[in-house]
Image 1 (tube, rainbow, N blue to C red):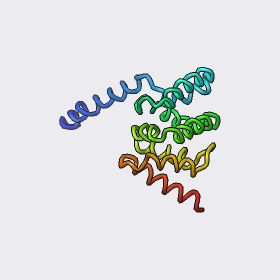
Image 2 (cartoon, helix red, strand yellow):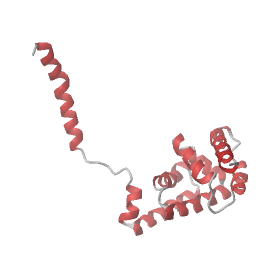
Image 3 (cartoon, rainbow, N blue to C red):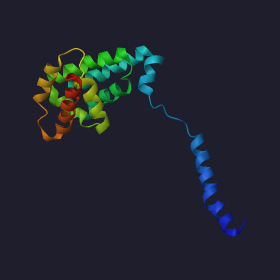
Image 4 (cartoon, rainbow, N blue to C red):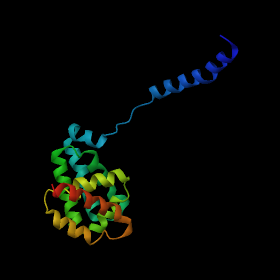
Length: 161
């Protein structure tokens, strides 16, 4: 092996191997800690859920309220929790759509579109026309146009088939 190949190994391979080793020794984090808590400590889960619901429905600030929506998306596959989340979100849409939309736009665009699809266009407890009527009171502001456009597109695809 020539000197340049040895230098290449020493400068790149050895440090790269050490980095991989260090990453493998780091503790792992739980990406779905909230949803995991449902199966590990259901009583604690519902206590946290009720606290976050209270913060969300009080609409103090979008930053404080968004935790409920983040957790809603994290555990959206759980029927019991999804139904409870639907009830809460639909009530906020009907009572304070501006608060809800202000909170939704603090989330990444993918999350905004998922919430629009799951909760705005597919309500469980209220009529889609009531949801739309309430949202129409708030979302003509420029900052909500992308959510309104997605709502209209999804509604058209779902309800005209």
